[in-house]
Image (spheres, rainbow, N blue to C red):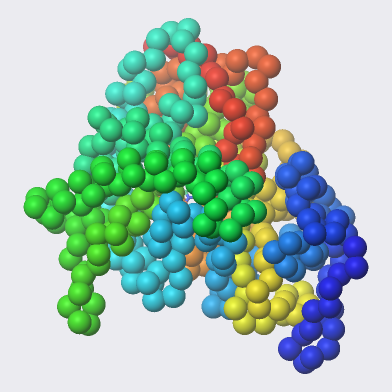
Length: 454
Ligand code: HEM
């Protein structure tokens, strides 16, 4: 395809890194849709550290080297925003919550929400995380087949709601879970990307209905917090804030942050658990080593915060699982000022793609990169790894606010579950993944539960 001309800041034709030819009008979108993970990996293998092509949305760059990714996310982060392409997917769901906002609004609300994720505060959540997990697994019957991802989604949703808002949503978990699920599914359909926002597509109507159901509950939680204030919890913080004119946040602004945290705080961790269980089911020796560690350290008791320092293999399993199956498989940024990356001038408005999926599986940084080998995560190996060769939680100012929360939760859930059960993937189950904001499986991941002798 003949690429349209684009000019650099000096008025001359922009020099572009190599990249694939696309088809007229659709660019490379068909190849991406056919096999997204194969496409992004192929781009890295064929074109190297930086590639460029023209898509319907404009010039697109894919960065495949940790140092280039570090430049965008960390060193020169003020040159970049998330951009309309990313934000328009989430806007109908999370409005202007911190996952989606920019500038002063983002800065203020991130600052307000941050204390809920202070390491000291997060430690307080540990007991509650284990207790909810014990409660959930109590209902599992020996020999039962679970829809594992669904099971994990409900559990992580209940945990995040209790931790951040101080409310029990156990009675509403089906409504909230179904509404959030609807959002995720609908935001993944093509019609959302292709048609202008005012076209009432079926998926947009479903989003609208899901939003109405969810909002009834969320505004109810906000009202409860107004009449029964607590001295901690994200909603209480947001209710207290006022600007220079003494104005507080509107209920709608608070609602956006609540939905953001419910969504970002449960879907990703549930995926991490699902991928870990999938990998362990395929690697019995790793599972044996995990269980041996749990027996030695926990001696049959549920895991606590104090045990985590000794659960080193458990942590290695989580890290290795998020290397091979990063729950967020890629992120995008848009330059608002020109930047020079690897010698190429990147114009404002371009789309920059950076894929955890690609970099985490690159043989330059990992020996035998496709092997599931938790033991590779030694201190020595980590100290030699380029900083952004592993970035499941992104990096820089927009790094995941819930990274510590998620790591705590994943280790406690994994320990609590594997201490009691062996999970067997139903034979013949493939793990096909969507490549949108998260890497969710296209269909359920069924696991047969076997109680361990204890
Ligand atoms: C394994 C679990 C998780 C993974 C892999 C993950 C991954 C990520 C990534 C990659 C980003 C950056 C997105 C971007 O820059 O485009 C992000 C942002 C975010 N995450 Fe997480 N996340 C996880 C768990 C959580 C949890 C438990 C919470 C909250 C309880 C959370 C809340 C957020 C929020 C609010 C943002 C936006 C931060 C900002 O822009 O200031 N995440 N997450």
